[in-house]
Length: 107
Image (cartoon, rainbow, N blue to C red):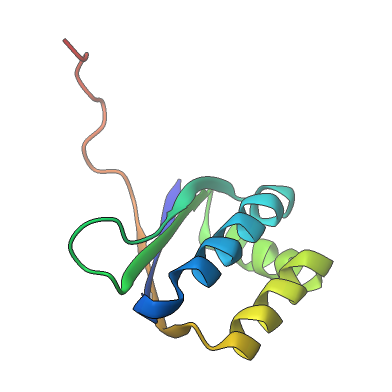
């Protein structure tokens, strides 16, 4: 299993647009085949850093997922929404794998 962590730099004065963007992905990412962990917007500290995090079985599955996402009507609409509104200043993707498993039991 691999996890994609997307780090966004967003316009801090337009955070509500990022929230809309995140909710849209919350609908179409699972439909297109990824296990969505969530989208996280600024709360305390930085007002311009946000994250999107989801998992897939492999990089090959990621490529298939990206194709389905690009063909999804809400996915296309969400890409265009972000482009048109310009609230995302930059984004980067990092692929990681879980290194701390198995986890202990919570007390």
